[in-house]
Image (cartoon, rainbow, N blue to C red):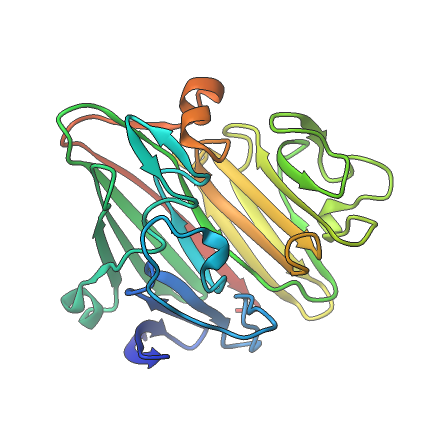
Length: 309
């Protein structure tokens, strides 16, 4: 049975769902971020926390993402990297993560965590609905174009997750990935193809190991090539799996830092639509984006499964 609850952290409201298997907590005022995702069977909290502690604030639109709390999972839309598009200045990681979303309290009373937002710059209205069933969290999205002309967008779910000893990353069907950026490791420039999971000697990406200190990397799957991703730990028997339809969620992003970015060690497994990170390059260069016609709604979803159940 699903239980809903409302609490607070640092004077910001938190809203959650829990059953016997998992608990998920969202902060509507802070971008509707997923603050916590916990396996109640094993006790593992999957969301990473900065070693210096958590500090939450409502930040002005356009603030650099590196100045955010860097906690939990954020929604990146309609771009991931800042850019200019259709005369609009789109901020880093998009418009949604720094905005206050509206909470549907009636839906919450019926076991669904629904939040909505009219994007402050781009002509999109977005709704995200989360429900839990057994050991699964199901995310459903609806994005409506409120403009009189067609509009392009990209999207990524951006969860910063803790890395524990023994964690492995499994990408069924992936044999190659595309580089977005690399720090202190020679894996090419944006768009360069690398072999998965062993692109060069000494690097084992499935083991989350660069074979050297202070490196970081952002990758993308090739289009429609991946439909799931799993973080698995054989020692603890914990696993987290993303599942999605690659015809609608056509891209999987991987961000991994082992001290290479601000000294942090964390992992982001990012179901997404479109690539690479800037919307202008995705549309005019890579041709990997989604288009929504006037007054039409684009829908997609993904599922997170936690084990042991």
